[in-house]
Image (tube, rainbow, N blue to C red; front, side, top):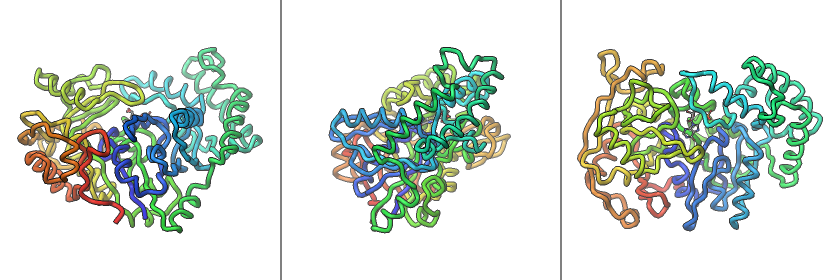
Length: 456
Ligand code: IMP
């Protein structure tokens, strides 16, 4: 059977922790989109692991798969695997031969294009994600399988690299400049990536992902699909153009891994919600508190003293600084129209609400219940980001709840949560018409209140 874990908001909802909690019964954990833009922190036996590409389940001894929908930077992959090995783990990670490879020129172009975009810049992680998916769609990408075949690799590079060189020249830069470190040199790229291909082959890491997963499913094993990023930065369903270039939403679990939609649809689809909102990058955010320089739009955020103080409190309590980049994240109240949109797009069967402990200690907790858009009330996200930017959040206020002993509550179960926290959670569940499956009250899995076992 399968379980799919999807971020319901803007990424950084704490998906890794939930994969960790529910991953025990999984045999295989699969990523189906994105690349090393996905910072996730996993706490295992008191040790903290920060990963950006390796599926978080691999830390716990599961077979990890990077599906065909992923974009893979092999250097990052081997760095992460080497680090895990140095720390005494023995990760088993397989990579789809159909997955696309992030090449050095993709990273360079990510930076150059972002700089040139000005107001439309998405504030990318600079990992080359967008340019790699562009080449995939433009049919000039290099796939993982190509790294294993030197003739094909050279052909692909000879076609793609001149295209990239002319792009850089169009931006007024010299592709042979020292600062690009050979990123546009066919011979250098060929040697480096052929060697990476040899290592992938030596370690028997490449697979036909769909066939590999089907063979596990045929043995009645449990497969968990681990979405990266979140629904509102999905390239189709998110706040375009301030999005990532893949589909974090549940439908992509099938396309990005090579199993059918019916396989994914027979299992649970768990939406991961953070009890408030956080965002790395630019674009509107109707429930934003405070203001982050260079990210919050000029008119955005709540820059009152209270708004700033609440933002700082939530950011510090929640450790809201990017795992990959260290940038302070923008924060805001929970946005219910965003969650209604996510529940429909993904077909959530259950919710995991994280970081409920971060809000403890506040006198009042607010949520954006609906928006006012051009004088009319609306309960879901509009389809264009420009309209979303004109939405004003209609806030609802809940009584706050006191600090509590997370581990004790997790042991005793849902009813041990403070009453006001339960009222808040039940409001969210009712509005989305989706049951609460678990509640995160701290970073470790012993600080998660499990209401529902997703595998039974
Ligand atoms: P890219 O994925 O690096 O191209 O970045 C595109 C947008 O997605 C930017 O606004 C990033 O901040 C955002 N983004 C990418 N990965 C993550 C993530 O794992 N969590 C939160 N935001 C992300």
